[in-house]
Image (tube, rainbow, N blue to C red; front, side, top):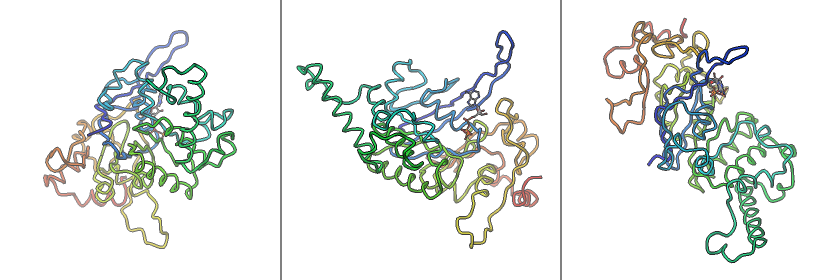
Length: 369
Ligand SMILES: Nc1ncnc2c1ncn2[C@@H]1O[C@H](COP(=O)(O)OP(=O)(O)OP(=O)(O)O)[C@@H](O)[C@H]1O
């Protein structure tokens, strides 16, 4: 069963202009109709270049952004419909790990108080129910404090740190250790889902693998579910069961990690793949190179038809310029299909309707002109 299911999510930010009175003159369509599901205990990797709406989608799940339209089903409830107080309570189950560990940890708080904060806000820890009855206020506070400290030390140990970190401050740690503290801050609340927004992009390459391995170990031990947001396909491949590729506010392709890396179908996915450096410099790189024409269009004024048509080496005039392709499952729409793509041309090739034209194949190899 899916732990998280997003249905046709839209997040549009108003663009305001005006000297005395603000007028809304348009909208940035940061997320514009995304549907995806994440199974319990799995990792969903969301990739795409900067500005395609990945962070906005993650923040919308936590309701840190307003939701313009759509549903966010989590553990049987639509988060989009919750009032602020119910959402605040739900947030202990949905945590976020941020890209910049230093920027997201208050420099004036020691690690103990940073980790305790969430427990105190959510009133987690200490005796409950019958056990709490009959205890004096002072005893209840003492036992709660003890239990919360135990939870904090437990979370630190899980990420490879110890109680010695409690009295220290964020600047006393290395980047990798600070990201471990960011992960411990999420873990201490025992969430079901953690949204990791660019969890390693601020770290040295040598440290990145350690943090990614830690996330995987924690998933195995605790049965966590992750949404990992990253612009780097190598990072996403390393950790994800399913990968979704986002372009200008929409998903253009989704598949299991193996399927996507072995048979990328959307030209945008293929261009991202062709930009991933080959790890071994002594191995000749014979992959196709897809260089995209033009810049990423503005999400305030996205192109009509297929959002990608202005940069697409496979563009078929008329259809691609006017008709927006849906994200459709392969295998003739078999509901169990795990590979979905939103591309008229890829669909036609797959259905045998058209043969890839040589000239287009040529343009795929050498880049769109
Ligand atoms: N609060 C906001 N108000 C207006 N526009 C916003 C706001 N937040 C994000 N945007 C815009 O929405 C679009 C998507 O931004 P978002 O940060 O979600 O992309 P991203 O793929 O996560 O990129 P990055 O990797 O650079 O964070 C961008 O054009 C951005 O400028």
